[in-house]
Image (cartoon, rainbow, N blue to C red; front, side):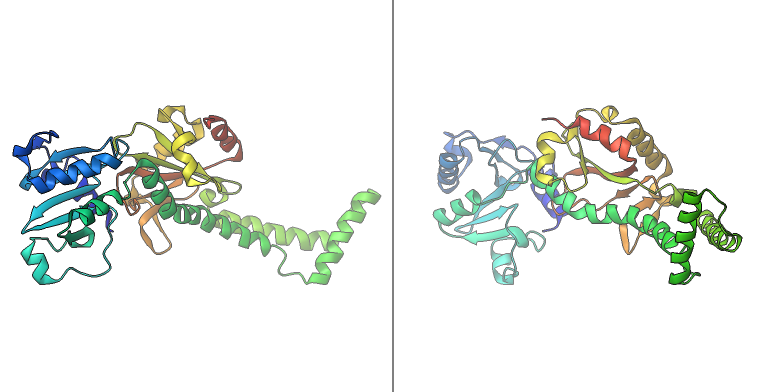
Length: 331
């Protein structure tokens, strides 16, 4: 399901969903008998559900205060309930005749169901899987982690390749002999044989030249780790993710209330990302949604399947800074 459709169709502040009249449970004059019965059934299993009459006289339903948008939008039309929910994902299109009869737009059909029974309409709403902050975080983490890791590992891979090939010009037997000679020279406290020392120094010089050619930014990636940063819309917390942490833990314990509470290296690199701008960054592989600034971090416009994400980025930090981040975890 497209995040833009979910956010624009079910969001609280979208033009189609703005208040027309607050539904009062006992006010039968503002809704049909069918809609009133539906509301009462939903209330039995979701006592904290709230209802709003929106543009077109439709009923918007929020099942829980934790939902970031409406969970369902229902219309009674031509003797049937036209039910849209955030978790409906149709595999097949609604027949054109039914779309025309029940006035279902082509863009809305993927999360729309049509039923003439109250029981079925109620079940569709009760089964809706709310768009909660936890779900949004899990979705955007799943969407971005691999690309964020690639932004760092690609640069580190160039260094690793260079290091693996340092002594590639020397045969395996010669490398073993050279290593033995250096060990013996150290143990016996004598100089290394000149021919071996010269051969090893030539390889080392080529390595240093190659490292210089890669540039300071790639060289600076050595030993860095990925710290992902996420900001959700209308939620003041700043969430972070590192290593193999389960995404489900983030909402409860992996956050700061103010971005300035993050370690200084994190703040410095976030500032560099902001001032540089994505226009001056490179693509990561074939991804055009995510840009990388080598040794600094990455920024993405790919916000996961559900939307409701304000910022998603990462910074590449030292192990020492990662220890500081771990100390921020709220138990």
